Length: 147
Image 1 (cartoon, rainbow, N blue to C red):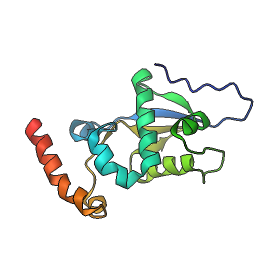
Image 2: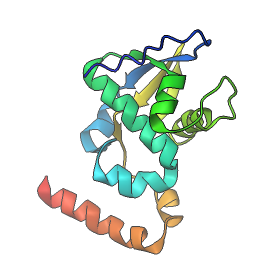
Image 3: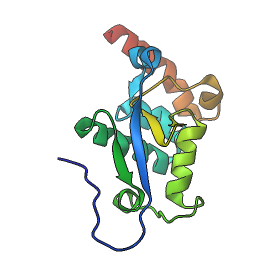
Image 4: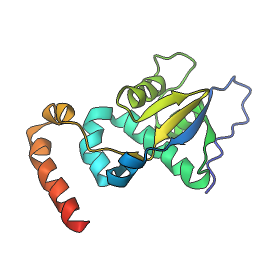
């Protein structure tokens, strides 16, 4: 399915060019943004809106591997969040969180977005609920055995 995000309304649109962020080191050891690891261990860091946004962007990369133009309003509505032209919207905050936590960064006029995330940092892990902190080493050990 092509992710066109085309709208026929006359409302001024906010468009965001997204491109994949290539990082060979992270890509060799990391976790896909649609993985269970991201859901269990990155979700508490990024929050639900940013996690859903990075996953939605990643689905678009399946069809457009070099990048594409994202309609912010259409994408926000598809995720069930608000997007207007102010940076204080949930969509704007989700993009900011992706940047704040190293999942995305601006590159010229584009937003480079990771498809693979690294292991969460110890700093973030320490802020998680005890059951997640306790599960993390076992999760990594299981992955190491599978490799």
